[in-house]
Amino acid sequence: MIETLGELGVLRARVAGWKRDGLRVGFVPTMGNLHAGHFSLVRLARQHADRVVASVFVNPTQFGPNEDYARYPRTPEHDAAGLAAAGCDLLWLPTVETMYPYGADRAVHMRVPGITDVLDGAHRPGHFDGVATVVSRLFNQVQPDLAAFGRKDYQQLAVIRYLVRDLAFPVELLAGETEREADGLAMSSRNQYLDAAQRAVAPEIYRALLAMRDAALAGREMAEVEAEALQRLQRHGFDVDYAQVRRADLSDAGATATAGPHVALVAARLGGTRLIDNLEFAIGA
Ligand code: PAF
Image (cartoon, rainbow, N blue to C red; front, side, top):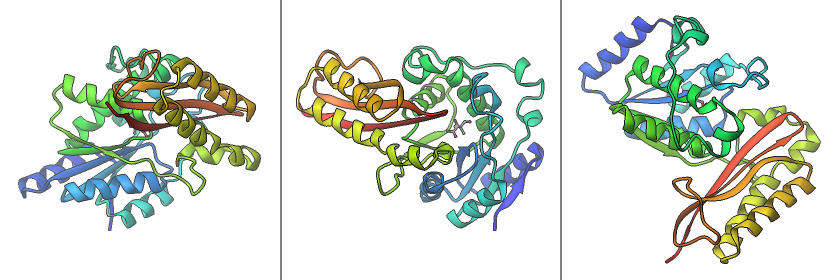
């Protein structure tokens, strides 16, 4: 049985009651239209907590003016049923008014410096400020002991780690593995925007990431590795925002990758649909 709440006071009382009973509370924030990737985060949180709260809130402050806020898929019944099956105890469904009592335009905003200047931060100005803003609010509302985020949103996870450390949120962060379709396409709520032809080429992103990793491991020049990935994706009809190899902390990888943890990252559009994916790997000493 899953309980659905929309009143902040009731949510606070429920979580406070659990904590009084000595129970550890896990949290999975989402924007809904849930898939196997989200449900695996619920199961991950469940392994480390006695109670799990998930939120569904399509956050207006993390969408740019020409992005898909209005058409972002909203599937509340499907989400509640899937969360219950995955072992979630409570579904938090705040309204925009609950989340932004003064209105989204007059809200106190977070600004995470440095790591938001590159990649998605550069291509989606203000996006990560919106994510940091809503995640801070969600943490204050739910007051979880731990929260689970997916590795598919690699830069988002880095931003949230920065936020939690910098603002000393007493929240342990868990990172869930990317769930993939059988052909390698990373699961995403935006995959359903793809028509049949676009869906058939979408796994090319994962193939490009594998090729980038192998070329970096082989010691190839980074500029060449990235140019090849760009051309490969363009040949398949993608409009590419970036195809880059970076150090795990998202700093520049250098002319050829040196020893240590790295990540290859791609953001590319098929028609109006923007897809992101990444692949982590380590280069030996
Ligand atoms: O990853 C998402 O679904 C969203 O960015 C998040 C973390 C729920 C904030 O709105």
